[in-house]
Every structure is written in structure tokens, then in C-alpha cells.
Length: 480
Image (cartoon, rainbow, N blue to C red):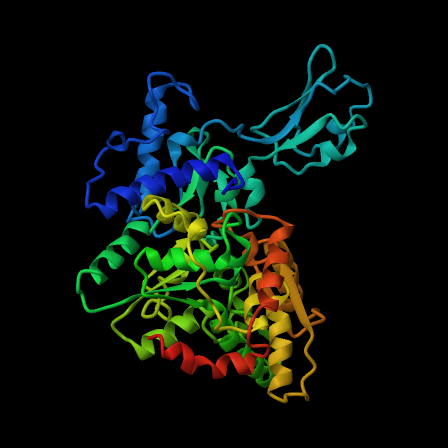
């Protein structure tokens, strides 16, 4: 069964897998050709203009798999040499232009950027064009089109521009590390740094009597991934990698929903704290609303803090769909609790680096969280959980008006209304990725089935209430 949505994901995975394979055996990766992979170019180029370019790009992919540029604070990086196949973009006149006499495009252009040749065909001077789009709107033939790079189209916050030599560049002051550009780039020229080597090092040291254990905390969206195996087999596979045990981040979501409901009732207006990309977006684009961000840690931070409070010397690794989590663990309030982050793509690479056939393993069990904690993984789930938490705590004097925001564009609209005090709501659930966490850039697969799988996973929860799940913390503590 196919493991990934795209061939670009598969290419990225192969590099991660081989880097991990070498790390398990303490071999060095100084040169890209040290890796005996099928993707190492031979004498004939298969993906680029020449084998020399293919090898150079592979070398850059290996660097990112090993942690990337340490001086670059962003976890999202552009592989410059791989980013040269896209058109610069902008408004272009197509062959549909009939050289008409009306010249409406010329009339509406305030910058005199449109001229005509001897056949009366229109041409756009890019040095004058400001991309207002008015010419495209008035052309009776629809002959003027807007060409936009996939990464720029994917980045709804306009953090990507075209720099020197037509290479994409990321504005770190705007970027929220959501990874939309990573998933949408058809050449794999934008990637997230990997901490896979750090995780392998932790596991190896813990298994060599270093007096600490490594815990895997997994996002509830894992229920929609690894479609070729059962969830219980995935859990067994994680433990086979060397993790001491596996705990649901959904339990942290139960903890957050319980506290967030109380905070919301006290303050009257709140924005959620579970999505780090959304939180970063609020701080960067709507700083006046930053005081209204929930003061709770994210579910990842909440459950990791609980684990570290009970076992300070342990290591905690979050496994999920989110590239922004790799930025979140750098925050002062999160850094003490979460030691590293892996995406589902990287987890798949780890499984295969050790030749683990998880589909043939016995099923293990996850039974920590409630239905409400588990549905945090999809859009609308946080709002449902907060509503339930208000009910369970008997806070019936507060009228919840939740505004679930599916994707960063919906977040922008809600935040803009809130900033102007015209929002018909008192709780903004912000999800930067479409669909919520199930649409994260680090997912193996994306699609509507992911929502169905998460809801099914939620219904299978042994604990049917948030309060009941939190009361089971003692059971989790027994694993520590």
C-alpha cells in the first residue's frame, strides 16, 4: 500500500531513512555518496538537468535531514539549488489575447505597464506592473492570467517572495512554520529541518545505561495515518524503536480543555493555544490580541510537563503532523518539557531504518484520553471539547460562542473582526492547517478520510468524559 501522498514526500523519506540507518550504526555521513540509496544519481540524470545537480541537491537534503543550518532560527529552509524550475510569476498575457480594439486592459492600468505590438497583442512590462489585477478583470477574453508559484500560493500569510536568481526566500518575521509551502512545493525545494538524529542519540544513550528513559507522546492525528497497519501495531513499532512507553497527547488536550474552559469563563474572551502556528500568527500579525491567547500550554506541552514533573530526568519526544511544533519546543515555557519533535514522515523513516514491519506486529493499546481530547486533531474539536468542559464543571452561567477557524485564512478573518470588536463570538479556535492537525505538513496522507478516522478513534475512547480522562492521570503515572 502507498505510504505517502506524493513522490516528493517519498524522496524526502528515503533520505531520512538512510540518514537514520547510518546513525543507528554510528557511521558517519560526510558525503552524500556515502549513502547506497536508489535515489543516488547514476550516470544519467533522472530528475534534473544533470547528475551533478542531482548530487548537489541530494547533499543539501542530507544536511537538512541532519539538522540543517544551525545559524538559521527557522525550521523551514529553502534548498536554493533545487528552487529554479518555477516561473517568477505575476500577470501574463496568454495566446488568448485577440488584439482587440477596445484595449480595456490599457485603460485600467494606472502604471502604464501595458503596451501593444504591431498585431495589437498586449504585453505587460514587469518593471512597471504592481500586480493589481485590474487588467485581468476587464479583459473580455480572460486572456490575462495570474501565475503564482505553488509555495507563494500555499503561504497565505505572504511570508514567501522571489529573491535573487529567482529563488524563493522566506521572511522569518512573518513565517509561522506551518509547513504549507513544504507540502505544496512540487520540487521538494522547501523542507523542514529534521531532529531525527537527536532522537536516535537519545534512544541509544537511554539503552546504554544513561539513567533516563525516553517517552514518546503522540498526537491524536496519528489515528488517521499509517493506513497500512493498525494503530495498535504503530504503538508496538514505536516501542520497538526503543521508546520506554507511548502516551497520548490527547490526554494533554483533555487537561487543556478543562483549564481553558475555566479561563474562558473568567476572562470572557479567549483564543486557543493548541496550534503553535496560529499562536505565532496572532503575536506577529495581531499583537493587540496577544493578551487574549489562552495561558495554557498546548496539549503537547501540558502532557510533557506532567511527565517531567513526575520524572525530571526523562526525555520526552513529541510525534505528530506539525512542523510548527519544531519551533514551539524552542519557547522558554515549553523547552523544559519537550526534548525533541518528530513528524509522522520521520517516524515512518525510523521504522524502515530498522526494517520494522509494523503491520506484522502484535497490537498494543492506548487508553488514556477521552473522546473530546482525541478530536482536538480536527477542526472544530477544540470548540466541542471546551463546550463539554464547561458543562462538566457546571459553568452554566457562561454562553459559549465558539468560532472554529479551519485554516489560516479563516483565522485571519476572525482575528480581524475581533480586533475591530465586531466578532460574533467569544472563543476563537485557531487551526493554521486546513482540516486542523490532520492537514499538517508532516502527515503521510491528507484528505477527508483523516477526519473520519479521528472521529472513529475518538469514539473508541474508554473514557467518555474529560473529567474521567483527567482522573486517569494516576494510571498514566504508574507507567512513569
